[in-house]
Image 1: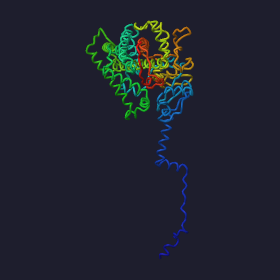
Image 2 (image 1 turned 120 degrees about the horizontal axis):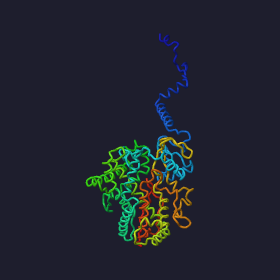
Image 3 (image 1 turned 30 degrees about the vertical axis):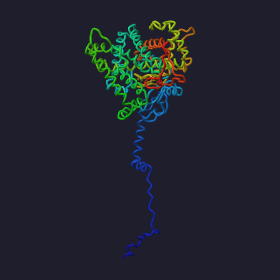
Image 4 (image 1 turned 90 degrees about the vertical axis):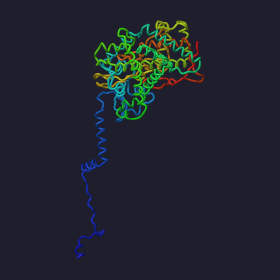
Length: 522
């Protein structure tokens, strides 16, 4: 029976039939792969890649630029220490109008005097507004307040008010000269107390320059030993350095991620809050003794304007008063103080220039009478040296972003409405087609054959156009009076064997590496 049951079903190895090989059509094989885990992941990746490409592809005739990776853009190749130098090199490859991607933020870089002037002056109305900034949005709590990052009618109203108010309180007048000369005396006394010993001038310069802003905004000056004043100055300095560092760039590029991560970028916002607290305390004191018929300063004038103009849409609110005041301090303290530090750097590196400046000052003013702006036409060499310090010092190398209000062209390239544009001031101040020796400290750039001072169109350290620096006239006055006042009284030097570096450290502004000097009384 068992034999009958097994008959025809021999399962010995030699009698087994090979299994049939199933061959799937290519379409079925691909579908099977897509259903696997690896296939699902690859499909998602390809979908995101195609979506990213379609979303970020450039329109026709858009400015060229280096290849950008998804998400990162070009961040992996930018010079983290001195990005403005890297952009200058890219301009040599791609031309004076090119594209660079900060993460997914596509920005058109504008380089060279001709194209920067085209964007900021010729097309001033088109490139007057600022693009959205995650960092600024967090600074101002989403209000679009302040003097420098606001747009539209609010910006116009606040800029007009600030200019007219600051003029009323002495900007460009003898009253402001007297205020600066008074501060020069305090600064000279502080330096004299060093008794010719080695000291760091950076803090003293910050104190002196910031006190000029304090006089305009708050109607008072602070003693150099005032604790809260010193904390505020420290905050201002660190904000500007961090804002322009790689940490600030990462926050602007990936705000959703960076706001949850630890790192130095978080100090930006705590420092800004401390500056606002410092100003708010002064605001509250002003409100207690406000004389509506006799405003003392910017804060008083703003409070009176708030009462008379019930239009919060134009920014006349207490919140915006604090923001605008903070902007004035940020823009008006570190820039001029840093320029004075660069002045010492170049004068010490070029002692013959320092001697020639002092000789001119001695012949026109002497060493006892305080300088005035009326002396400037009679000090052409001194004026030329100051301008060359500002040029080579290159205080604000990258400028601030603009946004195209409408479709336009730059250098023949198509710039669509809404495109962010960054004019590079470094490229103007060192433009080889505009300066005889752009990479050399040379006061002769601002002198004619007869030794008379000459203006140069490519001298744009304060930017240009409708967003030109609000405090340009004040900065020029401060720089001239402080510079002459210092060299009247002192000769500056460093220890033997020490050579001051001109490389600097780049944040929002470019500052010299820390150094100490001797100030020998003349």
